[in-house]
Length: 279
Image 1 (spheres, helix red, strand yellow):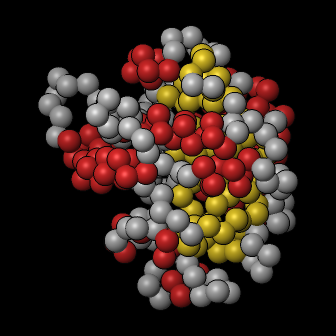
Image 2 (cartoon, helix red, strand yellow):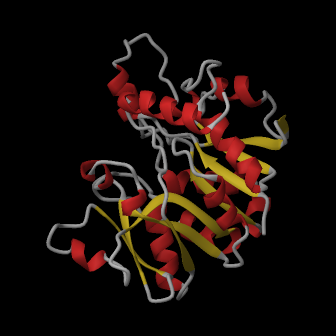
Image 3 (cartoon, rainbow, N blue to C red):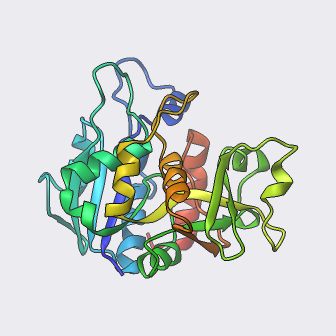
């Protein structure tokens, strides 16, 4: 069991900002801070609520260099802000001078572990800031006895169109549910090979549990994806699994994970929150 949660919120939110068609002089908005209820509470509030219900105590928000919006909501101090039963600290994902946008999710997690060296020797969960993971999903990873684990979602339980699901990553597990492969957008002639022994496709929604000491070198040495020009967390995970046999245990879960990618998702998520939470 562990009490640490790292939430990746330092991305550029390019698809969301493009879909909102913001003017040139309008500040870019973080998806995690868009108001979702009558009080203007964002998706991140509900994500933190679920994490606290699952028993997490220490939350590290990985944000961009201009993080005033997050600090306004969750505390101005760099470390140890108190928010509804949680201890919230910030890690900054700095952008290299030669780049215009962040270097990807593996880089975000690496920078967090550099800024909080204690995490290099502790267990923690890491997830996106724009997916509303359930209390159950958080609890499964928090209570896992495995050094590394993730949620392998049943594609049938995700309430998305097939086109939307094709943007996520399919995973391949062995007979004991250890991770073998992660593939984004597998070709149509190979997709059937990703069905598990139950005839189901399993999807990664980027929520993992890690042992800091073991994942750290793979984050540090994560290669740059040749097409997306980013250091991606799934690549670091696969490199670790290739080096450490049966390193990552997959926990099977069938449920929807609300996702905030474009402006069309805002009204869908507002409805979901109204139906599932007391607002």
